Amino acid sequence: MVRIYVIDNGGQWTHREWRTLRDLEVETRIVPNITPLKELQKEHIHGLVLSGGAPRIGLDGTLGNCAEYLDLADFPILGICAGHQFMARHFGGNVTPSELPEFGQVELTLCVDDDPVFAGVPKKSIVWESHNDEVTKLPKDFTKLGESENCKIQAMRHKKKQLYGLQFHPEVEHTQFGEHIFKNFIKLCGE
Amino acid sequence: MFHAERFIEKTISTLQKEITSKALIAFSGGVDSTVCTALVNKAIGEQLIAVHVDTGYMRKSESEQVKQMMESLGLNYRYITASKEFYQALKGVQDPEKKRKIIGERFIRIFEQVGRKEKIDYLVQGTIAPDWIESGGGLRDTIKSHHNVGGLPKDMKLKLVEPLRDLYKDEVRQVARALHLQFSERQPFPGPGLAIRIIGEATPERTRLVREACDIVEKEIERASEKGIMELPWQYFAVLIPIKTVGVHGDKRAYGNTIAIRAVQSVDAMTCHYSTIPHQVLDTISTKITNTLKEKVNRIVYDVTNKPPGTVEWE
Image 1: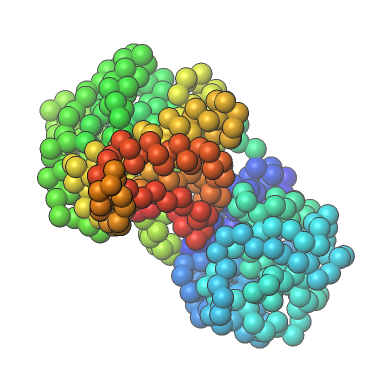
Image 2: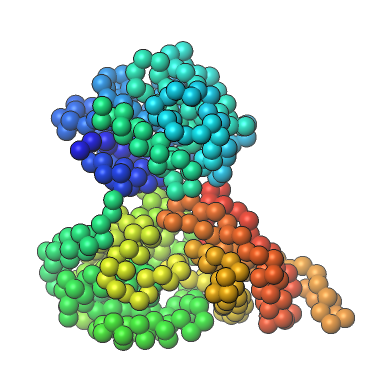
């Protein structure tokens, strides 16, 4: 059984991420973001989800031990919303308040067609959003994977490591291919 | 996947260990508290006392129906009328968070009274995941204080038991079906009741207006869905906006309140899409509400907000 934990940064949908993983037969738990990496490694996890967060922490917060996970983990990590913003900042990108924040339904356009996390997802699909801040400069080791009309960096990945960031929320019911994206990420963790 | 049968089995055995003396369950008659009651009843039987409080903010004939439900479920129950107490506590209160917290505290004080009289140590609540998530705490922001979580007074004497904490509404319904409860598909109704469907002060008169409007919205939408004109929404109701606008009623100037029609599609209440109500149905609802509530209401609006950015209820 694949074991993927959810790091709780205080998002409204942290528990939904846990539920989606559990529904897909993953062994999962929600753990506080101050959990040391060593403790997670002791439990032999195959991947991590960095949840969205309390208001504005993606902009300038430290998100507990998330930096340690991103630097040292040897398993795939999926950062969502504040988790994605923190990932961008940590690797030298920029996060600023959105000129036009996005809440609810948005059209996502994929910029690549060969990424394993988006395998089987059409070029254009409906995703749901809830953010006041966004990544405005991609970190140098990252590739942009998707965009929307008002947010140019909706999805990104590290060029060498299996680190993914998503501004939108694949865990909520209304995101059209959300479960599919999770399945792809689980597959990546299982390999 | 969520396995209702497995959940039922595990929960009953946990409850048997957790509850070692008499327990009280806060019974609103909604799906969450009914499922919770059925589970605890299976676990501890006679030791369970169901308490329903008529807060004065229930829907039309609702508390009477709840009484019948408690009878039909064969529960050992207490029915408490407390509308005067609730109206008094909310007098002059406009802030939605204050309303929710006052209601939450009132509930607990009533449960504590019953608890003292009947020597009860445990309070069982049908709290589900969105209730504690939205109530905030720790890193999480408070979206709204659900009366059963963020509204709990700090000095509460009863020990809290919440077997449905990790479940969402669709999962609670799965458990309800597995338990063969006939109320499994009831639409959600908030614990603070109609008090949070009145923007501003929840006076008895405003409650009368919104209760009537909610009843019309429910009946007309249910009728339309039975006829196959529209899909039954996940939740559907009316909100009273005490903003007055000008109208004309039989050659006479009218200056009345506004009612909003709210209906949403959802699975788990964490994201919602507003429901598409056909114009002919909106038309009937609009005419019925304004004709029934006469000079009190002369404008009807239709809420087309998703969650996010809105929430299902307005407060």
